[in-house]
Each structure stands twice: as C-alpha cells, then as structure tokens.
Length: 325
Image 1 (spheres, rainbow, N blue to C red):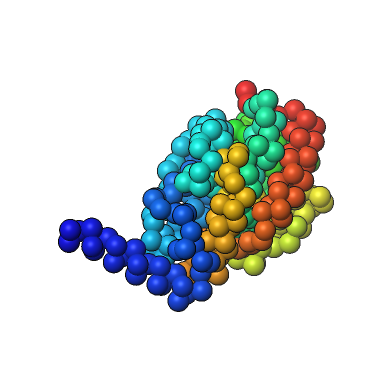
Image 2: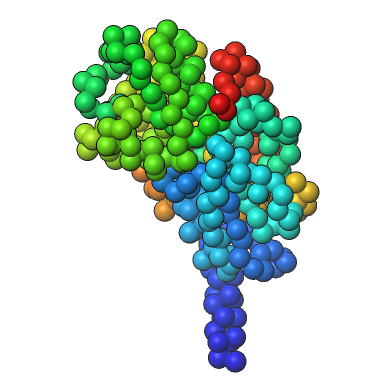
C-alpha cells in the first residue's frame, strides 16, 4: 500500500509540475498511462540518438511516465523504421529519425516510402552534415583535399550507414569535384567516428554532433558543412558552396513520427509534448552543444518537408546511381 501510494503521489506531483510549467494539458487525458518507447534507428553516438535522449529526459519527469529510447540498428536505419512502422498505433511507440526516412526507400529499393506511410508528429531539429578528415592527410581545405585525392586515389569516406544522407552527399560531392571516393558505411556515427579518430578511415561525412568536440581538440579537421549558410553553431566552418560547389546543399532534419493509423488526437498530444520540450533551456543548450538548431511546428509542416525531400532524394539517387551494394 505504501508503494502504491508513493507512486500515486509521484504521478500527482508530476502532473502538478506539468501544469505549473505550462506544459500541454496531458494529465487529464488517457495518454500516457504507461511508458512510451522512442525508437532510434541508428546506434548511440550520433545526432538522432542525441536528439531523442535530450527530449526524452525533459519530457518524462513532468508528464509522469518514462520516455525511454531503444536503438534498433541495421540496413541504413530501415530496420528501426520498419519496426516503428509495424508497431501498434496506440501512442506508445514514437520513431525519432532523420531524413534517411526520405532517402533509404530509394537506395534500398523498398516498395514503400516511409515519408508516406509513417505519421508525421513534429520537426525537432536541423543541422548540416560535415566533412571531416584525419590530420595525417595534411589538408586544411576542401580544395586541398580534392588535390590530394587526385594524386592519391583509393580514398574511402565513412558515413553512418547505407541510404543515409551522408551516403548521398558524399557521392554527390565526389561527382561535383571530379574525384572517386568509395563509400564506407557504418552502423551509426559512433563506430565511424572511432575509426576516423584512429585513422582507419581518412575522411567522413557525418553529423557534427559526433565530431565537433574532436575537431576542437585537434583530433580531426572539419573542412566544410553542407547547409546553404553557415550554421550558427559552426560559424568558422565554410559551406561546400563557399568552397566552390554551387548548389551542393543538403541539410539534415531530425523528426518524430508515429506508426501508421495513429489517431489524430494522439498525434496532437505528442506534438504538444515535444513542442514544449523544444522550449526547455536544458534541451536548447544541449542542442547548441550538439550543433543542432531546434525547429518545431505542426505535423503538416513536417509532412511538407519530408515529401519535398523524398522527391529530392529520388532525383539525386537516380542521377548518382546510388545502390545498397
């Protein structure tokens, strides 16, 4: 009885904090009444995992139910996205993924497009991808790197997986630069960063979250970022466009989706909870440290973004002849 009473007290206390903090009025509804699973389709150490955990640790204490992260890796994130797609549409499974949801279907030749099957919840954050090299190459700019590869063929570039935005931007960059660099996919950013730091792979396109501290410490060098303008968190890193490659722009987004068939009222509640999390100082500070820019907005806005990127990735993957092989 004492334990039950304590749990009820904690739940009531959580609801009180929720109301006092101005969070959405979820306490008077039937959701959530048990822990909520967040599926992340890539391994720990990358930006998707970082975004998911930053949001989860802020949401669950005030809602009164735990939001816990599960990493389900493999096939460029498609295994985790498939798991979310096949989960019950009851509000207790949320997928947090990136624009792999728009690119992977075309690279992996799937019969479905995640952006058309999954239910959009909220656009959480954006960031550029960055190109980094091991210091042993002795290059300090994209121009120097291109010159080095032309004289030293056989270079491979790391990414967090087949079908990732990094896979696409890497081969797109190679085409525009007139060089050949082989794609070396990893199961998430953590393993790729480890091999880059060890010099086992000499360059990589990855999210800055996993690289920025190593860059600042001098263990690697970030040479460029893939956004149209320099990200506020990376003011000293030139863009690929500034480095001479006009139109070479691909910004990653990180967003929450629900399984197909999730009722609109549950989507609205999920959106409200995450939207409020994006105003939390701890989350915003964490995003800044991870070189992420918080976004937000209605589900319809995420849907528009995802559909537009689906079209863009279909074109790029076809033009570049990218396959999972």
